[in-house]
Image 1: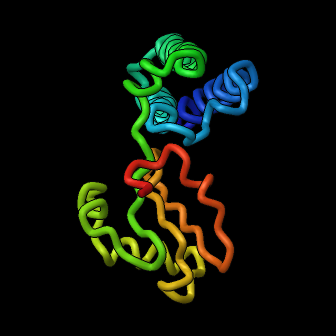
Image 2: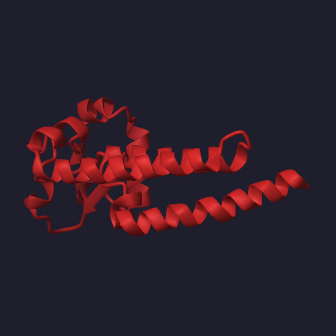
Length: 164
């Protein structure tokens, strides 16, 4: 029973710490705007889980690790907003994997995907005909964006690798 009480107490301390740090750091804290953001989000979850579930981990160490992760994320976000060199080092480019109904198999493989993976993403996006898919993009976060319909603005592909 002491173990359960200890876990609940750790939750009662750590969750408000994460919420407070998120409020200080801003909305980007748990975004998936870049691969870096996603990695920090996963790390924050790992620190939270380890601190809550491992009694040998002092709560102060968990709080220090969270503060460190939030600070690093805020610093990297600011620097990458000002420096293309840092942005290129930290971020992956989005990759075009389908254009005008045609599967770009080289890029699909480059993304570590299969044609079946992409077809599943097309279904999720309610694409009803391959010919109506103007573009499918493998985003830096691992998400797949599907642009479909009759009208299409090519500016939506600005910054997309292999956007012909």
